[in-house]
Length: 124
Image (tube, rainbow, N blue to C red; front, side):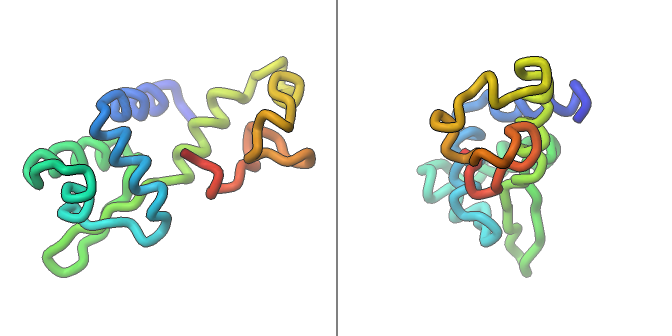
């Protein structure tokens, strides 16, 4: 991952509404949600939600697919895994298990490294 992509992701998630939206969509997995459902779940006006969804889609942390007159949004879990790998690739001189004991990272078992083999379901 390039530094510019990482900073774009962080800028996109720096809004509380966008962070809540991303976390909501992570919980939905591959099913995703349409914009109206997201707005209702978060208690926001649909017009406000559209602004945030557009920004998150441009940052590539969400994917969007048209379904008739609705747009279905999904969290892009792969890009978040790439971001985590980018942030931790040099951890403890490339030995992330030395930085974080396996017991403190329930999403990483003994035979997987933090920098790349993180299961999708363990993301926020």
